[in-house]
Length: 606
Ligand code: M6R
Picture: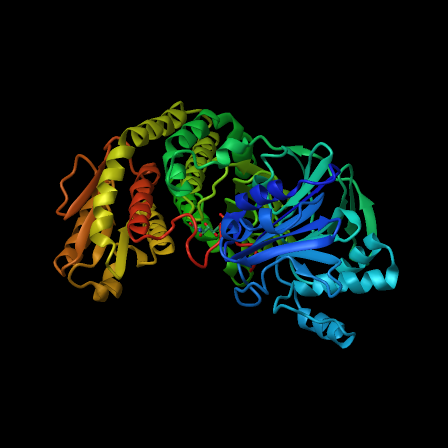
């Protein structure tokens, strides 16, 4: 879950500043340590250390020489503690090779022991360092630098996106397997990075490498070969894709945090999705057709899993279609029943979540069709899928998913509505209109939501626990509200189906514990949840409701929303105050919501 970047230029010097700005754009992938290595006429210069990228590389401009080729890394530790020694880039014994790596190598201990027996000295506890020593060893054995790199990659097992630089060789040597890596194409310079976001300020032309690809990237050329299962490296052509995200989308603008900016973007994204209804038609038609042959399993992680639960509800309620939602990391053990012809719908913001990719590989090996809803263009999941629909939320930088959650729900609603039309053989006009009206309501209510959420955050910020209760379609919204609060404020929070609460968790309610209750639009459900609310209130809970504005609910605090929204679209509105409560609580506790401790945006390890 690290970020890597590389630039090779023929200008002779001057990649350092660009390297730093690319690396800064990758900071959301990991932020416990960082480093840069530059190929200069004096050899390879390295600067690295513990801390944020700006803390570490602010020294770079003064302390190291600039050069024509360089690599950078932002780390989220997996092997080895967070320390300067373990920060990347990592060097070979002769300091002629520097590498950055994202992923985890299997059996690296064996490789390390073998190399140590040959006299290599290791300076870190990382698995990644073996790569630098292996390249050094293979250069001694084979002479040719490219061959040495290919031989090195052949001996690696596990997941890796690697970029290496070698003294005297103005190029990047890169390879990927089960960790993301793209090659960017510039003028007189070329790049590599963990994702396109790092390079959008330099180019919008990309080559998306496949698992098993190795590339030699010089300032003018990119040569790709692919490692076959029989151990050969065959030359391959990979197409160039244009990415339309503008670099401005990656700026925070006047917002204090990316998370707040991304919360604000939601009304516009929902509007854009509504206006693009026809774009989703092909996907919905494909899913509708496939449903005749097999069963539907939704697979996702984290916030996307919660969106998947809402999808399951919509498919059941609107189409009477049965589906299941499997947490991606559990897929292997819970999917033995899947057969040829069944359908897996994968939902992922990044399209790079290792658990989701592994689930999809397992599903494919069982002969299922794979359809996916993804945000990041060109991501690995898009290339493992038979059909892809983009949720079109634009880049999400804050580690806490916000706008991509509501975009996923809006797209699931559109797809379900289109499939309902197909089922009934008619086209209803109101699908687009209802989403547009949600977008308008959200726009109009955002300031009030912010004001109320800020007040509530002051009341809950010193609490140890909080509970989120929902029913029906807003049970997953309750799960999402709890996830938001715990991941950025570090307050323990749980989401429950409100009716289930009395079967155990009610024992945890004591004086002042916040219970955040999502009041249904549906009258019958509402009657039941008010009863559940009274259960917690009478035991001392501090009750906070998110509710339609035309109903009277006995509560300590209420955030009200337009009563015209209706049950099916209510998660799109209810999610927003929950995101804001989490945001203001984190900020008020002096915690950075964009970079919560221990977490990274894109979880590329299993
Ligand atoms: O990129 P994905 O949607 O596959 O990511 C899945 C989860 O890692 C992600 O939603 C995570 O739970 C977020 N930090 C939640 O805010």
